[in-house]
Length: 517
Image 1 (tube, rainbow, N blue to C red):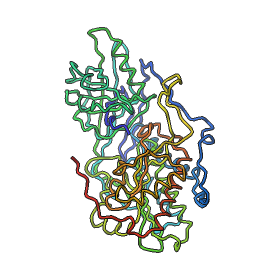
Image 2 (cartoon, rainbow, N blue to C red):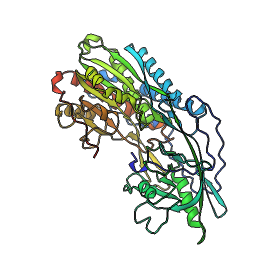
Image 3 (cartoon, rainbow, N blue to C red):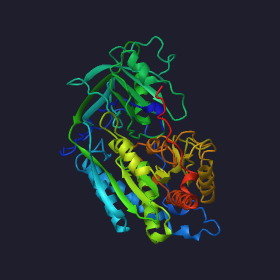
Image 4 (cartoon, helix red, strand yellow):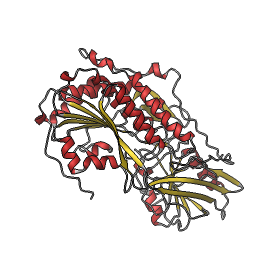
């Protein structure tokens, strides 16, 4: 989600301190904003939402899948969110989550291995992997001042791998850039200044960050116009100037401050950003196996990492994987046609050299040949359940995100054009168990970890990039238990139907690596 929000500078005159792994730092208290007229209240779920959620009934003759219960699966989401919060509370108040290479990553691996053991899986192990130097924003602070008013932008969040600002920070003119389109920036001098651009899901991608960078801005701020003041952690902006994301309330306060100044006066941005690249960190793959009647295999994978509480992305996916492991652990080995291998992947939120090393390891030719030579199916569990929300719905007053009692439709991939049998099986299962999908499949798998496996395994994945994606509002409440239940039951049905077919039904020659052009 939010492709246009790949980076954005932050303006917060004092932010907290973010510690790097292995060192606890003291959080600092931010002063209150002196001018922040926009205080949008994010819509909260009703106290009765859990009971109000729509639950899809089991299809006739499919009572066995009733053993997969969504409320039980949701507990796994809550436990993973608690791991993130513990890391935050240990001295990492602003850049936190189950971040690769941190103590939260290690705790997540141990937690998952213990779950596998409790279900009776065999060959449970944590495979350590070396990481290249990892990016950690250690401290940042930004304010906007004008007309005797100062705004602290507490929602400012540096884009992943943003370059540090010069020692002592910057004190430069603020420029309002609108949507950041060529028309918005006509005649505006950005050289040596800080530019604020505004975007929202559904808006045209104006390449505002790139354009601001090319016009010489020393700091680029991209305001997410979703109602509220969410902190959003963006992927790399690939700009020379540091980029930060900013919440809607803070961004509107800056816009209105700039507009309120008389001719000849300008607003000023003061910002600091200290960054460390931390070497010698480790992450891990977490393995568990349910031996079957043959040496043919089915793989179920889910990435463990995530920013903030990361409840949808990807505690929900890990919960679905655990639901499948628990369900099939109750099936006697002779009745499991194929050996099932479960992998908690390190993840992919970190980027750059020495990152996402688990996927690299799985794609090594020797490992690939050994692991996947007899694979009938691989399922990537990735944000399989998120609450359906509506932005500023018609005839409802106020800037809010409204919650519904339904889970969101997902993009999906099931084998691709060369495996129509797998597509038919998956679509039927999703429909029967109440998993809403986009009407057309992705010709290639959705962005995520199946992108590393689909070329040499028959793959299935569903996911949705929801409004709370990558934000500090991505709490367990945003993951409805009904969606977890429906998707996990559908996955189980797909596994059972695939097991009725010989290996040759789904295997194909390895597809070439797609061109990057």
